[in-house]
Length: 571
Image (cartoon, helix red, strand yellow):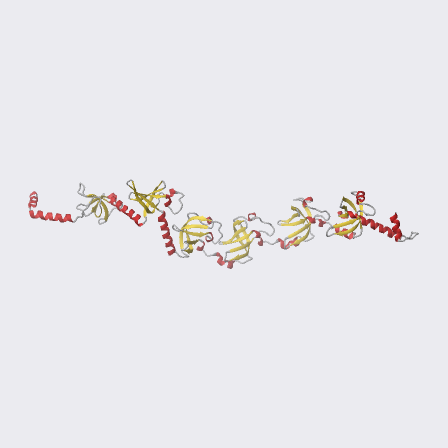
């Protein structure tokens, strides 16, 4: 063996061929430098190593742990040449270093080309967040650029894997710093998705979104970074008071697109359009005047909403609650959830409006009120309320009668009904008028007895003599009470005869309580006015004496009227 080797070495022809072959072999390798990024082909895989042909005289050896997945023979991988040759004779290469170098190139390219790069927010730092871009590269994302909305809970972003734009790369004290923004990427992504939505979606299509926020008029639905509006009127065919009755924050729901306006970036969505409009068959089921059953869904100051079937809801205005009772608020009569009977009063199919009545289900008591309380009927009722013009008596629930102050007494002038009446006391009255049209019933207290004015007018005409009691006297005259407790007035000029005495003499001569006779100068039962005259009474007496004297047949001596008057005046 040694001799053969020696022969080979000593053979000049063989030595020349080997040298030539070796030279040709070495000339096939490209010049490599340590730290260079090169590509190699996997030629062998062991339990812990991967051997790569890098086009060098020796294969590169890589620890299997540097691969995320075990490579296959023939795979091409990028590596960095660490050392051309190890003690074992293999080139030392690193896939991890190559990955870092490639990734850094990608980061710089992303910055230059404004392309997004993926990263993970790993923790909060002063003014923002620290982002892991991978392969050991860390970046800073300012708080103001982490989202397109105002950040209220920064902690919820920690752990999020998302995309960023590389905004800035700079060196400080030998350290490379990277600043990224998620907001810019989100804005572009939202713009792209919105444009894609308007291009691909048409009215009537079904879409899916997440309930993002509420307003008084509906809910905003996140369709993938941009919003669509689910208006409160499009949530259900029935009346909806609040969007929260139908959907909840964070709900993932399916909706129908009912309006698209690309110029205004408006998208209107609907839930109710998944079902048929119940109003389309309304006239097949209902007509004005029908009495139907329904459920009270909502109470308002002005009335109550009643649902007569799913999606068909009508309003019972507060004025339609009772024929007789004054309802200040619907809660006095109804509560939410009550089952009630109502009458259909009117409807508008185009506007989806329905007018209902509660009182119309029952007879109107005012229709037969004149039969129930005919004029002249006497009844006893309690005083419900007192006013300065009279008193109200409750005839039955919701129906009151008015006892006016003028109908309290035939003879007394009553300024305030409280002078003779008390709230809550039961009194007897008479029905004196019924006005069905205006829903008014008048009652009378004085009508329980005969009108003394009529009796007085029948008994005493103008010029007749009446007797009464002096009840009041003053500088203006006297007040005299006659039969039936009627008061008459005597003017001061009618108290005395100026030819025989003065007012003062006559005033002093009469005392309160005196019985006085006087002549009726005016009697008006309608206006309840009675005026009297003492002066005319004495004149009447004088005339009667004259007539009596002239016609006295027992008188022996006849005289003329002139002579009699002359004698009287001399007396």
